[in-house]
Image (cartoon, rainbow, N blue to C red; front, side):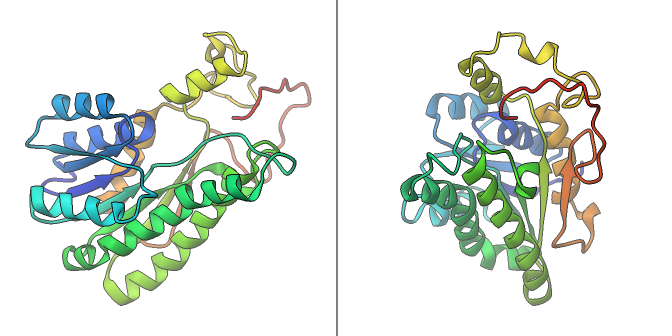
Length: 265
């Protein structure tokens, strides 16, 4: 097993990509700290994984002391901490016209500052374990769409943090920090979000090929499979890297002219 006996915090792991990563980590031999805001869903996951393999914290990452409490829960339950997956994120619409300072700062506080504070709280223990951090970004970090402006900015800032700390902490502390940038993923929340935007329940079955050359979009389990490499010792000393996970190139692409738009992927 590729993550045998590793203790891993996975934020935002009650649903979606985070849940898939946490479950895959346990399959690969790790024990996980499940985190999120949905108490009933979190408890279901812990029950499924078993109390010997998982423990739950339901708390907003923006609360004072929440990062420290996540770290302490890992230590008090499993005795150590080997890795952190910064997955929790606010995904919502916003553009130059409707984003005020409060809304902008909300995105930054959840998507950028909270991961920073968790790395800071975990660092002494990651240093002892020669551990690692995996940040979950987004391809929108490159520029994003008009109605994903504050979200895209927050993920762009996360990318800069990954590259900066990935260099600094590897040299100073022997701690690896890397990032994966998923493209369009069919999570439970994304499926519901598109229906809320007026699309039919089977919207994902007839996507324009410009967005889904394979005929479908990515699945959470596929992101989780990629995450295992970055969390495992197979990664070696690789640090400060950002890898896109999408089914088409982001730069230098020549999309067909007969495209049909679909809102806010």
